Image 1: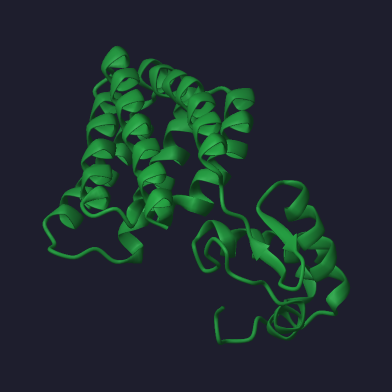
Image 2 (image 1 turned 180 degrees about the vertical axis):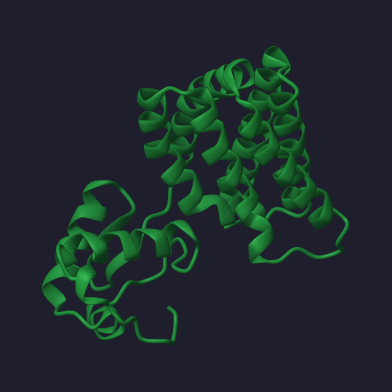
Length: 225
């Protein structure tokens, strides 16, 4: 958990429950809280300068979405995905994200292609390093954002966002597999290049390959645990 207390601005106080929910969810998605780690109401209330009521409401909401669960004698912990859940999520994600990549390659505007080129340049700089840091893990979030906008399909974006939250929340698990981080960056570079160049079929195929490799990394990481 971050050490610095959060200061809520006056204009941010309503509705506080939604902001607390988003704060905790982002902490899970960004790996501040990892799978199996306890989330303690009292500590969060102190950290966020709020009562425990919005904390409880946020955790209840996150539990209904599968991000956390309540265990006997342990309290609220960040959920771990089972192998069956991982396979289900990646199967659905592969179909939807492949479609998004294909549509993005066909519909991307010059501004989207410029954004993708900037991301590609950042990936190249990261790949030139011997070790990766937390910032290097953010590139696929940026690509997801550009692709969803370039595909110009609000309904598809809404469906993808829900699944992508799960992937983001547990992405660090797959990255623990030796060599997976570098490989994932190379895969994202390939699909970003395909979309930027308007190669729809290639973008679709690269996406399927990337998600299949990601699924295997998740399952391998779970076996190691």
